[in-house]
Length: 288
View (tube, rainbow, N blue to C red):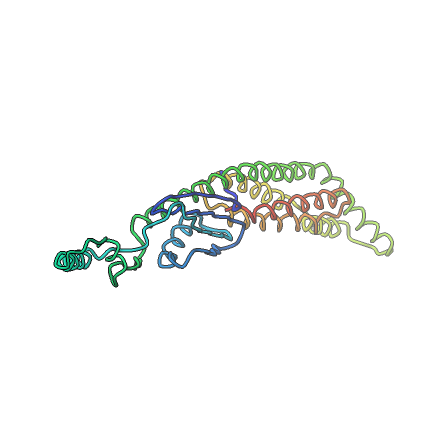
């Protein structure tokens, strides 16, 4: 089954008093084109996130968004316990000597270096694991979306391939008439010139000329390409580029049929084939 390159996935992780939101969007692109929007605190992990996304999603214009909501107030300070104790015992000794009753804790909290701001030097490993897990969950969601979209796309592509195959089957209805028309056109032209022609030589030339307009091989190759297109859609993955190449080969055979047609009804069939093929080419651009 084919996958669409279009998709969307979202996941949320809660860790270290934070709600970490991850959103991933994907559109069609020939290569993996990944854009990242993440807070500066997580920049050190950007390359790892890119690697995860690239390996799992393969191709597409991919937008990765990570943003953080605070769900609780995290401690923003550290207590220097050793200094706190030293202040306490020193002040208590002085208070006893002076026979003073006072709130030592309150005094100590105002003294220098008792409290200091907590500075995060590196991303916490637990937090990173939560982000990594959330990213993979969002990727799983986008792959589900891609499969769902791919099923619709595959049905549409298969229908259009069958339409071309049906049109191809109608070509044989006009082949004998087409050859007769070509033969009569040549003979009429010769009669108009009033030239004396050797009949054996004329028959040989007619056969040679008619063979130039024979479309048996083109019909066979076109049928083969149509079957191969259907088979390729059933491959487990990576069909997008291959379907694009097969579409080009289908186009070549249809163009050759058109150039050899020499029949109004055949030309109409070729035009209808080209119309179906253009829609196929547009849709295969969105196949992973």
